[in-house]
Image (cartoon, helix red, strand yellow):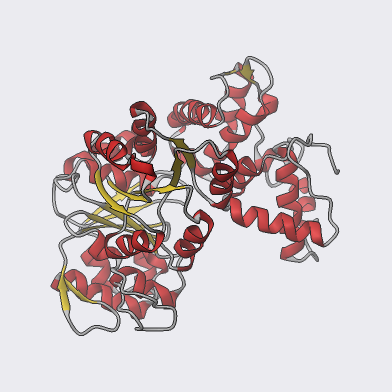
Length: 448
């Protein structure tokens, strides 16, 4: 793990660094936010710890502007609780008080380590996929991981890296579908200062960050064909040119790519280069949908129940028999990702000693009052959206989710799959437009 510490931490840098190093982390330190950003531009990191005395909000804004995705933990020796609150509101994952407690630092490091991406399975179909992954992980072969959205393709990619000969080097992921076409080239290959508008400093790309390790090209089927040719050259020649530079740079990475599409059909349709497909598809690992591996539903549900109970500082609760029956009977169109969100909601809503069926809110079933999917009520639910703008539907979804979470912004943002900053901006906008926005602590009926 690569850790970057930003700030002087009033002399506590040495102690924090030594604890992290003993836990296996490689540590770099910068006194200022700008110096810290320069370290991230040059080599990235798995985690940043920043002193709350610095302008954490401005630092987080710079990360967003430069598309540097890294978890940030705020820390400090003062008793200024407001500074800690401001840092978390700015986007920091946690606040760690100093002097550093070894167990607390260890817990923070563990939260961003491979253990956060545990591969949970029990079904024989998934076991077959994992067995094949174990066989090919030590090789240098490129791997194409396919399967429906939400099945855990990135988790399997991380598992492959952890079992490979490159496990002591970086695992770097880039989502090809989430980055605009005109920025993806810079994200992958890096750029020189002034290479284009917004290139405020030299920045290395994901290939260089992953040098010696593994690079995950997530949803590669969404990459523009023109960029595919440049990617093919890097894979063949094992060298690249940063944007704005004529100097070639050697790179040594293992490629794992993922896609939820039929890649062979994409090749036939001219949407994906055949030569690149064959270069990537040396070995194909297909992850079955959750409906195809029902034996994984309960192990995953129990895993997520513990995970979110710990995250929300609530007691661990077992699933009731009725809750189990409800989970097993559901088809899980959103796969593991939907199950994860469902269990997060259940932890927040369960009021007794168990997680009962009432706390298991299943999108397709509950939206239709239990009617079978494909019934007339499904059609009526769809017709309820016809004629409405996307903005209206989004506003209703966001406000309802916040109400559902008793006004808790953090929980609502997690369920919605958006950042806490985006959620707060949306709620501020809705409030200024005259809509009733639930306050923290409101009941689900508040403002209805």
